[in-house]
Image (cartoon, rainbow, N blue to C red):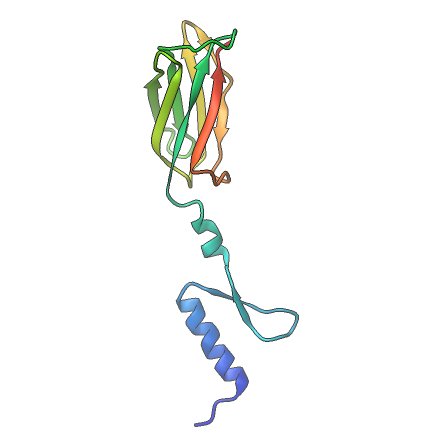
Length: 131
C-alpha cells in the first residue's frame, strides 16, 4: 500500500489530536503543531497563595482583622484572622476559579478585591485597607 502526502498528514493530525496537541494550518501550507485550547487553559490549573496585609485608614497594620475569601462558583467562604502585623495568608486557592477578598474589623470593612482565574500569578499579594 502506498501512502500519499495528504493521507500521511491526515494520519499525523489524528495522532496529534489523540495526544492532545491541536494541528494548526498556516495559509494553506503544511500542518504545523501548536498549543490549542486544552494547553492554553492548562497554565491556570493548580493552586495559588493569596496573601497580603490589612491596614487601617492611617495605613497602620490592623492585627486581629477577619479576612474573607469567597469562591464565586461554589459560594464557599474561608476566613483568616490577621496577625499583629496585619499579615494574612490563604494557601491552596484554586486558580481555575474566581474569588472575592475583603477584610473586616470593628465595624469597618475594606474594598472587595477580585482574584481572577485569568490572573496567572501563583502568588497573589495585596493590601486591604479598612475604611
